[in-house]
Length: 102
Image 1: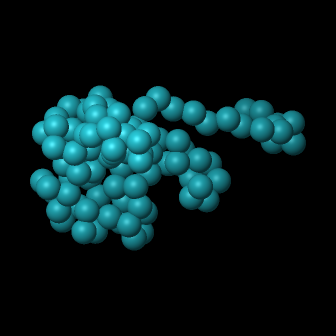
Image 2: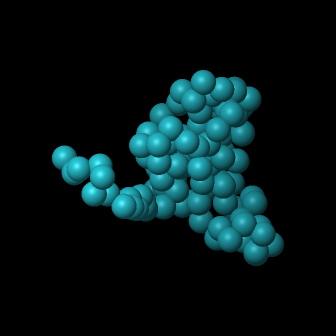
């Protein structure tokens, strides 16, 4: 274990957009959805336009969380009704280390 006094910075990074929906007590409402999960193909077809990409920076593809959130809205409305926070891997790890949601 490192001496805390000798640590001047920590970097947290992750790959893609795996995320978890959390309730008002910051407890997961369901299992996380992985970035490579392909369930939102119909949402990509329905909502994935150049305009949405220009607004969000997210291409019409199954990897962005945007389309999986639309899938959740359609197929798990009770999850979205109770969801108070969506945390990606980076956010979740930083919170675990600092106690802060940033």
